[in-house]
Amino acid sequence: MELRCVFRAGRVVEQTMPYAQLTPEHQSFLAENCRLCLKKPSDGYSIAAEDLLHLHTAEAYIEKIMPLIKAPNQLVTASQFSKRYAFLMVAPFFSSFSLLNRVLDIQPNNCVVEAKQSDGHFLPELSLLSLEAKQVNKDRKIEMESGLEQLFRNHISVIWGNLAKTSNVPFPVLWENTATYIYWLYETTFAKHAEGELKATIAEDFQNILDAPGECFGLKYNPFKKYYFEKQPLIKSDPGIRVRKTCCLYYEISPDRTFCKNCPRCLSGYVPQPTE
Image 1 (tube, rainbow, N blue to C red):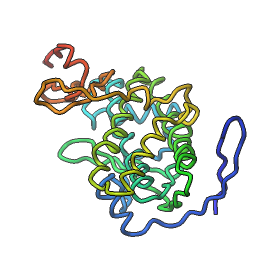
Image 2: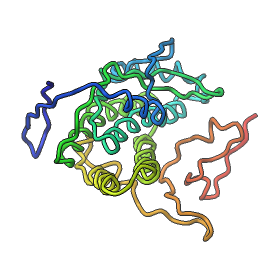
Image 3: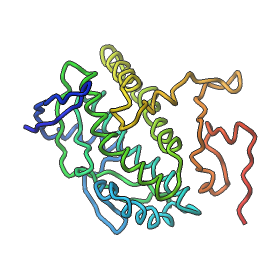
């Protein structure tokens, strides 16, 4: 049993939550779909999430992985790293919550980023020191808000603050980098598994994320509600897309200087200058 404290309307509510080992089936699902690393390899570029909570360590790590990402500076490195880091955290957490009905322990002291490469690209995986999780109770809204506090206010928000301070990457870029993965999970990926009652549960969980108060994220506002709006077809024959409000700077590391398909720079007519 583990005792957790959850903040609700200015008061602390104590919740006793039993944790149990993820089943082999659940572990395999997360490894196949969410880049969960079960073999727990280690190399000179791997880092504990807890270390990234410290400003100087975060800055040193961004500098260290710059050649792996093939970025020209810390700003671009931080933005591209945040996209990879966001996926590693939100994909297993929300997949566990909405599809497996389990709350994954994704606190910083339980997470290690394993810096792997695939086809020359920096594609890290996530190792969890403990593969324990607890079952979601009947009040999914409270459970979701508690999970958001664990994942964001006490974890990702702190790291995003360090990246912003050390690399000057704007907070809106970091949060929209994170938001795009949450939208993709709930609007696209989870649909493959959504039938009957599970479909309604997924929709409920997504709405609870969008309705969560800013304090769950350590902010004065909900960053995922801010960037959520209806998709728009750019050409009548094309499916609708949600054009970003910020640019993640992917074109800076793209060999042919291409944009993401929903990049506001591309759609505004901006043309990047070719590299020498």
